[in-house]
Image 1 (cartoon, helix red, strand yellow):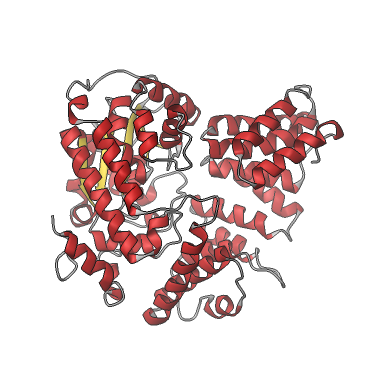
Image 2: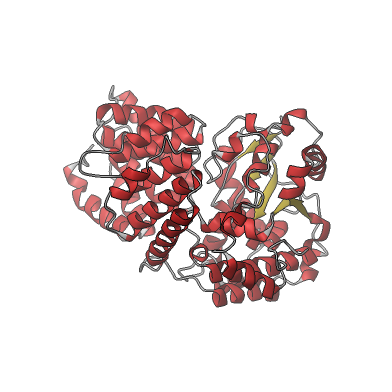
Length: 510
């Protein structure tokens, strides 16, 4: 739908702001435009649709979903289905909000109306994959292809969808297709690594992984992305230690009531098994899994009023220390309330919330913090072989430096929180599932339920990089996976050995 003529200027300004990723300015312009349009008029729909897409990056997902629902209600009242572009944008917002089941009918209608638009099929495939509809997702990702274009993000998603074989893969097609931008080259490299790795061609796989990582690293230094370096990360850690000393937590009461359910924060490095823990808990009758919520970091940044470009840095930590933690708790609770369906426990599985562990405890003294641990070589290789947005994951030395900072952070939070921080080992969980699941549930004050031993059967969408793996029963497939590339990963192993985290064979040192 096109905006009404009277608001065309605002529409152009908002669009320009979105293109330069100034979502605050775009949201303000769109909100102003909506203030000039009658509440029950269908001409509100394009502005609501556009505004919903600006609210998500601002950490205001509840408002974003409310805008989607208002737009859909106006279309229904007007007897209109909505055009494909509008339905795709509304569906995209719902997918970002982890409402894939709600988004899928909109996305199916969008692809029915405009089957030639590959981007619509990509979003539909993402929703289907999150819901475990593997065959449907494969069909959708394939439909992104046309005679003259290739959606590289969709091809990367397709490569990750399942394990491919020598008789069934896309290697020839992917290798022949041109990739011009850094983003496309990164997707191509990681997709070809995955498919060559699936069929055991490790030398070819590694070569493509290097191309993918090089392109991803180039992309990560774009002007709208602040560069990452280990020194900045260490300065942020030093700020946590300075502004959140251990004595703050000695008077932290453990059973202060809060509006809403009791919160379980699942933290750790990416690829450490946090999604598996989420699915184990999601199988419990008293637990609702909310997925990887960007809410706590966004709430802290907003409340701190820090003007810096980084979501988390030393300035943000210092500013956050001057805020009453209850202010953060109230804002976080308000933002997530729409996602809670009445169960007494909910999970928040954003791995890098480990940085905020102390502040989480102060904001929610009765929260449960589950720290997932995995052998460093497997965890870091797991991050290295995926096209993560984490800019430390494209270089072996950066991987080691980030791991050292992570370990230092968790050692400090352990001093501060003691038994309030529950460590779970992925390897121990795989070796003795029932023992560790009972221990996990006990730490969460939850009674044992047999369903938790079958997390692959848990209901609900999974939108993380582990979406395919966690649809399988608990298994040891990923244990020692890095050893297939031990020779190529020797720089990482050697650096971790120098730091005292692994031995000469790459095994973890406690």
